[in-house]
Image 1 (cartoon, rainbow, N blue to C red):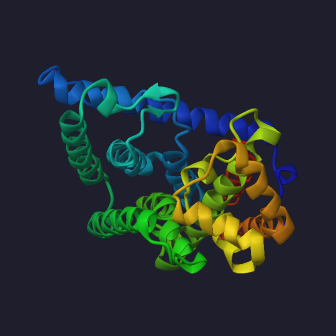
Image 2 (image 1 turned 30 degrees about the vertical axis):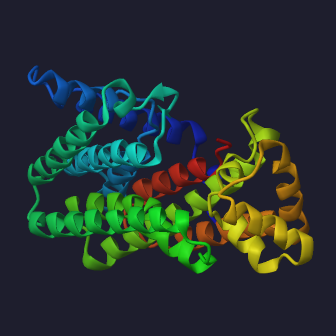
Length: 333
């Protein structure tokens, strides 16, 4: 089993920092137009946010795991990040979110109409970046990118549907996150690999690696939310307060009985619960064992992903990719 001790922690951290700096420098060059200011200024604003750039870094590392270099993958890496930020603008509108990474969201700084239009132009620029990829596989890259834009929209639509449905199952939830959170991670890796001339089998390995990591990443988010008060000083149980249907809530609904199940059902029916009652829900999770189940689920997906990654051809790039994934999965926020 791969661990961070397999390669130098410092070496991975330096590579990540170099890739992040490279991505940020290139993103800063996008949208140089001054007019109309109301279109391009919001685009520049969101791209200056404090994102970790996980997806473009994965695209670059996916290329390196194939060929040892990421030069050919830079356009697809940037396209994936621009697409990601486009989805964030529209997600924030749908979620009526006021903040993103501690800053006011685009529709709060400007207005909803401006935010929608800014998302639209970012969607177009993402395609322009894809088209600038110097690869004999461009048609395939473009087709995969387009298919996955559709899939991500489907995932977001399911997410919105699930907000009002009271019969969402754990399988429904896992399907939704595989189309939303997981899909953009897997497509970043696949497109990075294809830009580096991955074979069909290698591209599938990267895609499947990303699917496992992406799903584990979201379940980890669910787990961190209820543990936040223990680990980071954040408000514990924001998902419970808002009545979000997470891995923990849906798995606990499968296992809980009596008063415990009634409490969880009330969270779903009432679309949330008072902050003061979050510890009660957490206690139910502990009694049902779903915190341990979530951790086991994360570790299982992580192991499956690393088993796949071990097949990738470039040893240095492969180890760096696995090291980056290991660092991401060890986060506490």
